[in-house]
Length: 161
Image 1: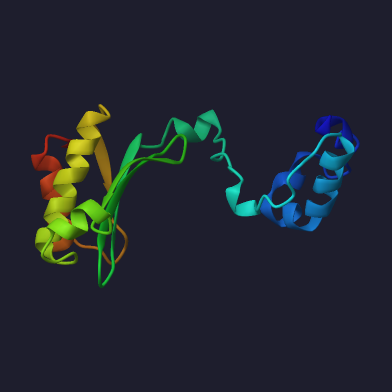
Image 2: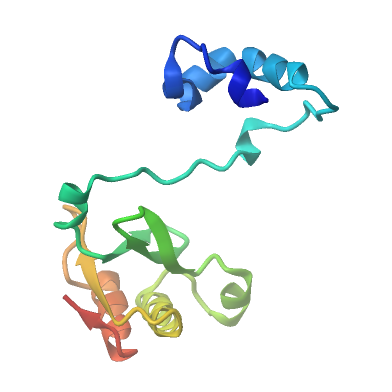
């Protein structure tokens, strides 16, 4: 029924993109109400699931399948592995996790980075991801915390390509 309401919509499928959705949100709610039935209008935009971008095959064939990205703040260390073709997070580990935070003496030093890398490596093997590619930002060098994460992921049994 909602599809019928938007069949003659002038902007086509682009209305679901975030800028258009904010502009046409009242129209969308009116169409749902027009479709019939009760609807809870207190649902916020934050609860909406936005699908990952659909990438063309010509782009996907050149992407590395799994990419390791690391982020370091003054308080925490986090690392995640992204599945490039679907642009989703395959696995992640962070010193912000409640279980890890209580067991760590310090959540931001090289030892914490090594522990995060070890945990991430174990999680990757549980999800049957045998190899990852490392993505380093421009300012990141293979030294210190970065080296600790990469070496501990490698020591856990994950191949680095």
